[in-house]
Image (cartoon, rainbow, N blue to C red; front, side, top):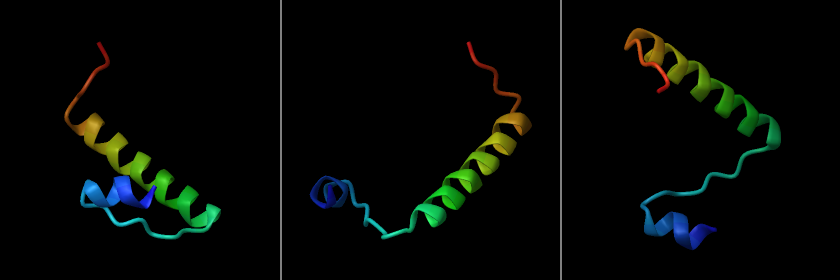
Amino acid sequence: MRRPLASLGAEPAPLSPEQFDAHIRSEIDKFRKIVAAANIKVE
């Protein structure tokens, strides 16, 4: 997995399951606010 990520310019960061869960929840909250503010609707 490291090689494909590196080819995209990404660096894998080792996270515990709890840290990964917190990160994903944080991203969902962030993008939920962006979508609401931009009034984006699913087509």
